[in-house]
Every structure is written in structure tokens, then in C-alpha cells.
Amino acid sequence: MKIYIIGIGLIGGSMALDIKGLYPEATVYGVDTDEDHLQEALALGVVDAGAQIENLSDADFVILSVPVDVALTLLPKVLDVIGENSIVFEVGSTKAPICEAVTNHPKRRNFIATHPIAGTEFSGPSAAIKGLYEGKTNIICEVERTAFKLQEKALELFKAMGMRIRYMDPKAHDKHIAYVSHLSHISAFMLGKTVINKEKHEQDIFDMAGSGFESTVRLAKSSPAMWTPIFKQNKVQVIETLEEFISNLTQFKDLLIKEDYNAIFEEMESVNRIKEILNGMNIKKE
Image (cartoon, rainbow, N blue to C red):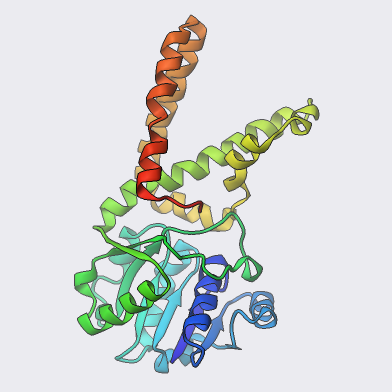
């Protein structure tokens, strides 16, 4: 079995580690424009050898794990050179643009659009984690456009990695993920900005920061190179979620100004049920 990982960071590297554990006979090749990343991945044993896009004709699997803006131009080129029995999947956080980019490609049947809901705030080959996908949900879009035998091949791999499968329309995916992922990252970035700006005058604010602040702002350590294209591609949905979020923040501020603490209590109590929802879904930390 020959596996090609294009973009050897947290997501692609973690898949490489899982595949190497599940299929010891497989050879995992790394493709990365950053030569330092490739050498680091080789040194860490994340991949077995380096490769180029031109080498993909004999691939069993091609995993495209690059920033979503790069994926739009790179995926068609990958489909151009793969063999008839190769299956390609792209794992970015926006799905409608990538599906549209290859909708008329002659080898559209060799592509399956996926989004594994997993990750951390770290990046690069050293961030790769074995078992990252165990128990996580993998969103698959437009599965009907992928050749059935290749679907089966991909689904077998996903299930072997411990992922739950969920099917969704690309536009619905992008709308929902704007709330549960993209807004979370924006909130963390802006909280970090607010505190950093205040820190210019009050260093003590960091001395007093506890685990609550650390867990809330964790996502602000995520890669801007990865997240800026995501916000660009999902701009309309992200703006909608921000408008709702800002409205809720403004309402909370108004309650404080009015000193309506009963209403504040009721607001927080009503949101406490999010814990029950997440527990019921068995959500694990990303």
C-alpha cells in the first residue's frame, strides 16, 4: 500500500502515524513545499520517504492536508496525475469551495471531500499525534459523487482510525462549522488581543491568569496561515455568526449596565445546558 501525505503538519502527520500503526506494510510518502518540514517529518518517523506530485500515479491514497486556499489550486493538479484506482481526500475546514473547484474534473469520482473534526492549536510535523482521530467525527460531503469502490476503500480507512462518519451537504457543513469551530477561533484570537493590549500597561494581568483563561484562549495559538484562508472562504457564514455573537455580548453588557443580575443569572443558567448537550454527544477536546 502506498500513501501520499501532501502537507505534513498536525492533521496530515497524525493520519500518517495512524496509518503506519494500522498498516505496517504500507509506505507513507511525504510531499511538502517546506523542505524543513519534510526533513523533520522524516527524522521523526512520521513519513518513510519524500516524494513529488509527479509521483502520485501509483498511489492507493492521497491525503491533501494543506491550507484551504492552496487546496483549491492543488487538488485539480493532484487529480490530473493520479491513477484510476487512487482515492484522494482533502481534510480542510471549508467544503463548498473545494467541491466546486473540482465539480467538472474528469476524475471527480476519485475524490472524497472530508473534514475530520479533530486537532490542537499546534502545527508542523512535531505536532502529529497518534490516535488523534479516535472517537472523532469525520464529515463527508457529496459522497454520491465518489466511485462506490473508492468510497468503500476510504470508509474502511476512516473506521480503522476510529472515526465516526457523518454525511452532510457542503454548504450545510460550512454553515454549521462556522458556529462550532470558526467562531471559537475568532473569539480566542480576539480575547488574546484584548488581554495583550491591556498587558502593555498591566503586566499583573498575566500573573493572575489561571486555567480558565488558558483553556479559553488556547485556540489563539493556532496558525494564522491556516486560519486566514478559512475565514476568507467562509466569509458569509462567519459574518453571520459574528453578528449573532456580538448581539449576545451587547445584550450581556446592557444587562450589566442596568444591574439586572437576575437576568444575567437566568442567561447563564440557560446556557449551562450546553454541558448536557456536549456530554450526550460524547464530545472530546479538539
